[in-house]
Picture 1: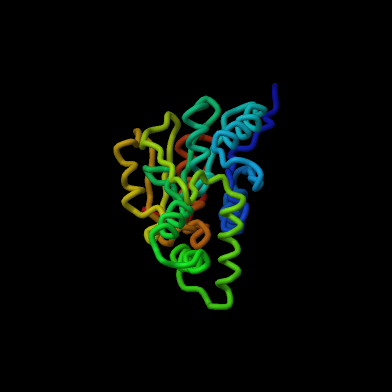
Picture 2: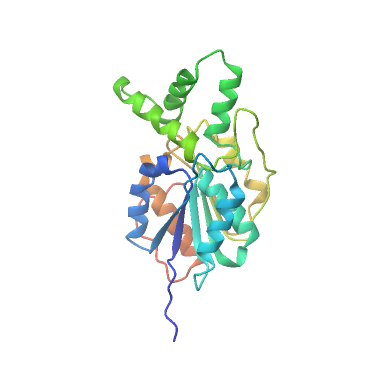
Amino acid sequence: MTLSTSPDAVWLNVSPSFQRFDHKLLVGLARHVEVAHWAYRQTPEEPSSLDIAVTLLHDYLKGHDRPVHLLGHGTGGLVGLLYARQNPHRVKSLTLLAVGVNPMVDWQAHYYAQLERLPCSRQRVLTQMVYSLLGHQARPLVPGWVNVLEQDLLHSVSPHSLLKRVSLCPGSVAVPLLVCGGEDDFVVDPTQIRGWQPWLKAGDRMALCPGRHFFHADSPHPVANLILSFWGTTESVLVPPQGLTIP
């Protein structure tokens, strides 16, 4: 008999500055399944390349002895989507949080579009992005959040810049898919989430949850229950906990 050396699920993060938003959700999931955390941090000297992130993820997953559930928020989810399309045999399911039917749309795409269009300073645009992403914030906290966004501009693998915005055609994925979005997310709005509908297979799920872009941080327990329930349909040994689910 061969013992498994793989986790049940792998959380994907390519935005180190945003890891603080993931913690409560991952703790909730880890009470029921083994969840590994895979992260990629881009240095300022490296080109912004999703291909590099996908290749490094493959180097990590090819050492596992069974398919795993992949999940991620924003650009981390996008990396999971690109990987699942290339290597579906290594993916048991894919969960996308705040990834729309046009999956390249992220907060940086909106930021660069506003920076180009509005007669405002970079700092002022970033300040407005803080309120758009997080809602009302006490004024003393805003400079800290602006710094978080600045760090994400430096270290995340988002493909966008002031010179170009990148797009990817909508499409399906061969593995079981769960897509979740925030009801008040201005980055990936509900229309982007509902746009997945024509691409969903039998058994795939789509949900809108209360909250903004980082809805999984505001409502970690309902989102965890939603994910575990979905995994329960793809993995017979998983028994989702009882609790609130989101229609």
